[in-house]
Structure formats: structure tokens, C-alpha cells
Length: 284
Length: 294
Image (cartoon, rainbow over all chains, first blue to last red; front, side, top):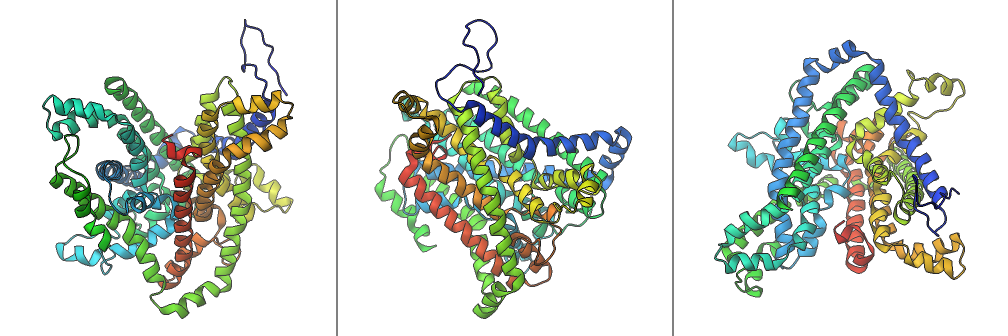
């Protein structure tokens, strides 16, 4: 057990405490974290660094890879945007309205968390296939969903919905009703109260929900590959391309695509974090 | 669906117009949007799983589930969950103990690292182990010469599953234990309890529902994981096929009814998970961090 000297002056790793087990708990956690997460992930970083800039660039700038990145990030943006709109409405209905079956509806929001992605994938494909329940309805309208980029978006909407609802919902529950009453007393219409008073307060939560749904969607594999049809240059997502490269024993190719994906996602999350702290300062 | 359709109408009666509520029309439209969206995106996929599972009759359903390949997939999925969930449980408790009960430098960074697997694509989670243990790695040839199989075998599948489900228990326990503070433990210690006694008799009872909640979510993901496992498994029928992978194989063999039969087991697991989760939130909501908006 490590016990830091309780001197007031100087650097202290931890504050003194009578509770035992710090060394054991932290030591075990760090060892486990290092073995399971840090060493394997740094292996990926090391292998992509070992590729060298020109090889790395050659793989990343390959038109097929670029197309897949475009699809993965583009479809994820669209799906997250759709989820922000509908997820906020669902959260509002769950928080503000009382109706029979509300508890069931609330529990159902978490279905995409609980349902294995492969199951979601084949279910959505069967629904949206040209002769499926929904596909057959859309067919006369000339809308094809399965085996098109639209199918990718549909799968990503399914996957991302709970992230938005579960981020926005608790913040909505905390809203102080007095603020709305004040707005109403001062003559604001309900629409004005919602758009000028409530939504700005919810903005940070909505942005967070968007970011989480987006981050999850970019890496999503199981639910997408069935409905996408996986045509190179058309409906091939980046995670699938990694799998294809691995199946060809092209470890360098798989590593480079993975590194690019991780870099772009981390950069986007950073931007969204900055946006969030900005909106918190402005509206918080 | 019928009760859902009339639900908005019932809502009008019980809630009189109020200055801080929407007009009945607006309310009806919002509820209709929410119901239709949820029905199309969440309910229909669930219904079609069971519909398709029995599309070729009960006999075909039972036959698929009785096949040796299906049974071995079920066995492997249970084995992998039995390895990965307890390990992540021990880690979650240890990490939450260190983070919630003590103040130390770099805590926020440690929490970020624990969350890391959530922001990594499942495919990449599998890839990192292929790079670590595969033929092209430094370890690969050594493992091969010693006859140790990790990739395309149970250890690799378990490792990938542990990676993907890594944060679940810790994420649930950290905010819960932070809220509970250290008062109870300090009291127990001052009354002469040992460290382990304090943990077993004071801390563990305090966190048991939250722990169960975290384990429930961890288990659901462990049994359902597809991308990460797919990369490290090698898809050997009857040997390294988990249930989600078996669903894929059957589906790609144009045996849709068979694929949905196996999928219906996983969907049933998801439903059980959701019901238990909801019950935990209703009964022990105060003792679960996630349901208190953390």
C-alpha cells in the first residue's frame, strides 16, 4: 500500500484517507486497463507509424477507401441529425406527457442497446427489402432502401436513437417549470417559450447526444453490413473495408484505414466538445 | 398497437390546458410523431424477428435450434460471457473503489481512458488483437511455436469481448459510489472493521443494485457482440462461432428462417434484459446511477 506523506507543502499524488485498498484497487485497475486496452491500442498506433508516410498515404488516398470514409462519415452525420430531431421529440413526449404505456415506450428506447447488432441488421434488411413490409410500400414511390446508401442511414438511425434520447431526457426532467411560467406570464406564446427559452437550455445535451450517436454510427458494423449490400464505391462502409483487408491478410491496409478512422473520429469529437463548452458558456 | 393509438386521446382528458403546456393539437402531433417513429424504427424490427423465426413453422424453428452447430454457438456465447463479464465486474469494482473513494492526480484522465472502448469501432477492437497476436506480429511466431492459440480460438474471442464490454460496470459504479461518498466506510472502519469487512458488509450492499444493473448491460453486449468477435473468430463452424456469427452464416446461406430462429433467441435475451433493467430502475432507482441522470 502506498501512503503519501501528509505534508502540506509539496506535490501529493493523492490526498490522505483512512480508507484502505487504494494501492490494490488502483494497481489492479491500471494493470488490467494496460493489458486489455492500452497495449493493444498502442500496437495499432505503432504499426501504422511503422508504415511510413508514403505507404500510409497511398492506402488512405485510395479511391475505394476515400469513398468508404465518405459514406461512413456522411451517413453517420445524416443519421445523427435525424436522431437529434426525433430523439428530442421522443424525449419530450416521455418527460412531459402522461399516457398509458409510457413506461413501455420508455423501456423500448433502449432496445438498440440491448438487441445484438447482427439481429438488428437482418431484421432491418428484411423489413426494407423490395418485398419486405416497409420496402414494398416504398417501392411504388420509387424509393429503394435496402442495398443503397439510404439503407445504411436507416441502420444508423436505429443504432443511434437511444444516445440522443438518454442524453436529452434527464436534462429535460431537470428543467425548472418556473422559467416557463415566467415566460408565459410575460406574454410569450408556447412556441416562443419552447424555441427561445427551453431549446437553448437543452442545446448542450442535444449536442452531446448528437456526438455520441455520431461516434457510435461511424464505427458501426453489424447492423449495417446486411442492409448495405456492400458494393465497392457505392455502399461499402469503412469498418467493412477493414474486415475485407484483414481477410486478404493485408494488415497494413487494415491498420491504415483504422488509424484514419480513429483520427477523424477523435478530431470530430474534439470539435464537438469545444462546441459544447461554448454552448454551455453561452446558454448554461 | 391499438392501445398506443388511443393513448393520445386519453391524455387530453387527464391534462387540462395550462399556460406551460402545449395546445392539444400540438401535443397530439408530437405524440403521433414519437409513436410512429418508435413503431417504425424499433417495434417493427423486433416483431419481424419473431415473425420470420416461425415463418417455416415451429418444426423448422425447433430443428434449427437443435442442430449441433447452433448448440455449439450457444455454448460458446455462454462461455465467452462467463469469462468476460466476471473479469469486467472485478475491474469495475476495483476502478470505482479507487476513483470514487479517493482523491488523486490524473483521475479525470483515468476515467477518459476507461471510456475509450466506447469510441472505438468494434471492428477496430478486434483488429488490435489481430495485430498483437497475428502471424505478422512480434508475438505471433512465438505463440505458434509454443502451440498457444489465441486468434481464431476462444481466448481471442473472449479478449475482444472484454475490450468491447470493458467500461460497462465501471461506468455504472463510478458515479454511484461518488454520490455515496466515504461516510459509511469511515464509520465502519472507526468501529473496528477491517478493510475487507468494510467492503463486503458496507460497500457491497450499498452498490448491489447498481452493480447488477451494470452486469446486466455488460452481459447483453457480451452475448450480442458481432463486429469485434467477427474479426478474431475465423468463423469456424461448430468451433469458433458465437450466436451472432451463426446468425450471419445462416443468413448468408439463404437460410433466413434459420438465421431468424437463432436471432429470436438473442432478441428474447434483449427483451429479458430490458424488462429486468426497467424493473431495477423502478424499484431501486435511487441506488442506480444511470437512472438518476448521470
